[in-house]
Figure 1: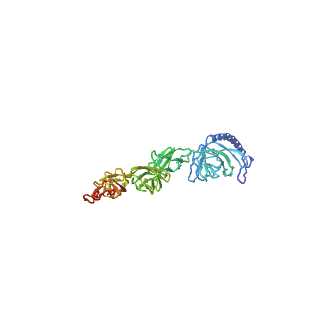
Figure 2: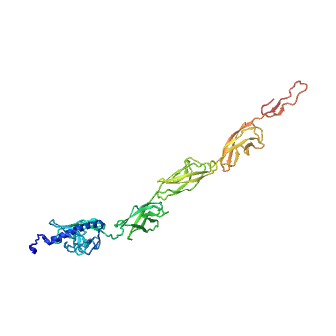
Length: 502
């Protein structure tokens, strides 16, 4: 062997370094110490970009230093030796530890195509990757059997395996960052997808976009809206001003939303907006008839009807006048109650209809009370006495009551010796009464109104006894003998209503 020294190798192929190698390593260690400080500063200020240059093998390169940048993708790493003579384009030197516990220094031996192999599944970043130098220029391949490395900034420890088993693994710090390729948003999320009916201009939902590019901006628009009812204001989906939805007309709306990021990449999503049915007050309360005849107990006035957009809703009714009620949708008088046209020919009644949700509507109806002909009543005679022998005598004034104001009446007397003239009961002309024949006469008077309804009353007419002169004086004998002193000629007689005189 040169210089009389032997080189030996053990069963794993290790060689004893020569004096020249030790000297060279010493010098390199000094350079590494200087460059270590530079590396630490570089880590703090910058990170190398991580991007992909995936090849057909399914593996890609982790680039750092001055080499090209790319994302990490899958592939098979090369297994070239680690002790290549070419230094990396970064010019950095890294320490590494030998198996025999010597601490040596050597310039980073990364060449084009050099790579690291990830010893553990990647979960959002590199974890303990190992360098696997392959070529001449500066990229380090990364094996990513697990989830792909996110392109967020990361700083990892990377170890390099010995080349052909000559050198133990070297652990050093590698500053890594990425140049993020823009990716389109992948989702549009809505904070809400329901809206109450009848709320014009209401906010339907707050929009948010899912985008792997953190801190990217999002601009929203509507690209499909057959109804024309919606608009975007900022990140809010809204109904247009003065636009309200009606559940009964349409309860679901489909619109297509689009989100655009800062680089112009877009994502579209069609969503369904559901309209919530809100209880609405009934309206349009009407009455089919608003007149009723007087004096009809419990009379039905008319049918009540209303409109309510809430199909199948139930309603209760209240009436402002307690003489009325609603039964089976009909406004009617309560049992036993009648109206009187003469008291009021029109009655204002307010009916309130309330639905099952407590909302109500009301309407006032003017109920016309029809005037029904009513029979006169309470027929009276102001006097019931008359003197006998008074031909055509007026007995008394007749009076009666009739709620039908202004109605006319005719009279009939049961005894044809009597008549009614200008409301007075009297004996007909030339007719007298005779006390001695009858001192009281019952007379029935019937009063009939213009509608044919009547009333009657019986009056006991007292016939007064009047003193009368005697008449029909007669002498039973009209002859007498002469010379008969004090002779009786005959008997005198007369007729008197009071007594017979002799």
